[in-house]
Length: 325
Image (cartoon, rainbow, N blue to C red; front, side, top):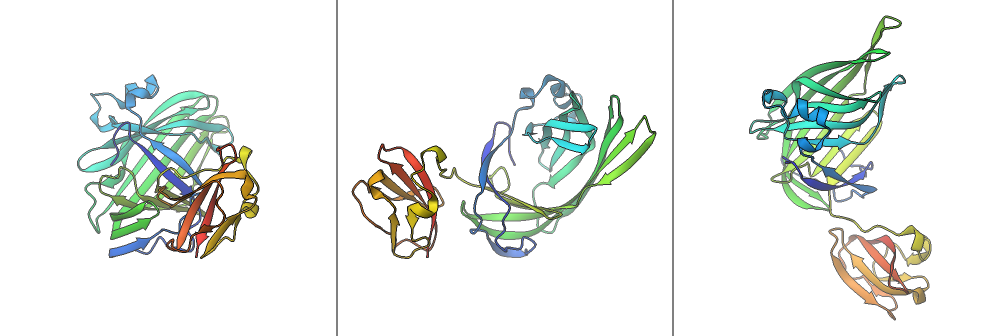
């Protein structure tokens, strides 16, 4: 599991390419090399003392060991469970012991006020060490007063099952893993003082699949399915990115044919000083300097690659993905 000051680069996508994350078992091989990154993010684990002072008082209190966190993560998204309540700048406070990984609470700006919230009991994220066929569950509720409105709270129920083990293959590499399936149900509860009326708003059930490798800190791959939404996050290296302001031409006009199994060409080669071919692990496997013609890719293994194109001023102007048939 992670520790304070850890950072991890993750690729994000929503396309499973037809893969079924429910498939699992003992000594299985999961092949997710088809995943293609849409964007990347950095997961950062902050020290508790680096979070706002009000949260330090609650989650770094030696007299309350149950809620004394090891580190925190930050969620930059804003949430509006109803129109009268806005939640932003959320810190999630987490604790790791030899036997469990829990979320002990959160701190957030609720309608403009910094608000720490203890989870009683803490939400059990995972029992440690992970053991095949182990099942556990937790249930917690919390609530806060909202000035000029009334009350807002949540009920969180989570069930975890270590439902598989074996090998996971992604573009990041091949790893021995344990697989955990979590079913998470969250309900928002609100009460309006003016109308003396309250109601519960169940959220869509979330099914979360996570693949954990030894000493990896965060899941090598996580797939969340909630309603019609699928969110995929997986550990990765920094991938090449394009520079839109300096692009030579549109992608369809620059690199051809694509896919190919023999030769690869670039439109208007006179504006190009250098080309690099890079595999999905970020390694440069071929370099072509000025005055080259076509690129022979016939000996490359079948799969996806990136081509970095430098303009006639030797400035990176485009990065394009191509498929070797």
